Length: 382
Image 1: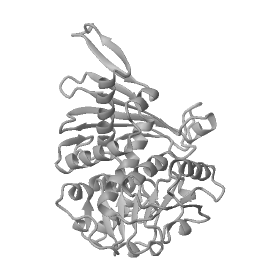
Image 2 (image 1 turned 120 degrees about the vertical axis):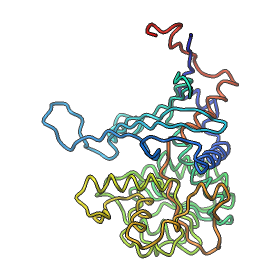
Image 3 (image 1 turned 90 degrees about the vertical axis):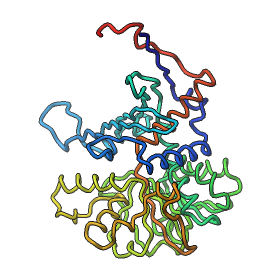
């Protein structure tokens, strides 16, 4: 039996609509609905694994062995199955190395594969840097339709890189009252912050004020929506202080959210995209040690892990951490008060890569975009 599959390079993906913010947001809404209905599979025995990661050692006696010599140095495979109308299996695979930036390359280079659920035959292999950025940025924007005050006028973007640019496009789709944007890069002279400012000026003329912030505190105070997407080493992590967030603020974390004041978080509403995934992160963190049974060394910087820590130490109940999927499916409320401070952890799942990849694959088929490649006419081994 002959098997063909579709190859989509980055230009093909753009023509297939990978940058369509509105459509991506609605696809993420559908994805989280299916997640809440348990119509999915992730890796691992409890189907809650983010993926399988290859971590590099700090040193090795083997000549030429790859080392952990920068932030986010890894290889990772993220397999999944998503049901509903998608009914597709696949994975996102990528290598990541911060030194890529010196070569004029993105830190991570990503590909997504879609497969037939029954046979395992490939349906498509596609460039996924834009796909991954868009699905990541669309998730908090989708959540903002339930969690953010609709009159939000001040948006703070912390970590103004590629993910935040995608998130910006998505936020501007669902929060039309945004008129002030604050940017916090690695410093007040951050090249990425100035590049983001130029992009906003060109793309969103309705934004009246764009501020490049001197400090993390300046970026957070008085912002209606705080969107964090940083990728930093442990030694470069800045501490967020709960008292910086105004009444009614919505805080989305997609990367690094380091806090020490856990007491200050307890009065806030906590929302997670996949609580079980953060439980797994915490177990892995504790297994690597040296920490106690609650991970009390506190070097983790993922918002969802803070939620797990508070539950594990008995400060809050598990029911106080709301599942985003329950909000999407109408079984839990979104924002209930104008003055409510809401924290929302978006860790990302390959389900989102599959759904948005599937949408682009279907659109590419309709528009006859991409290159058809042959796996075989007949398999040599049967």
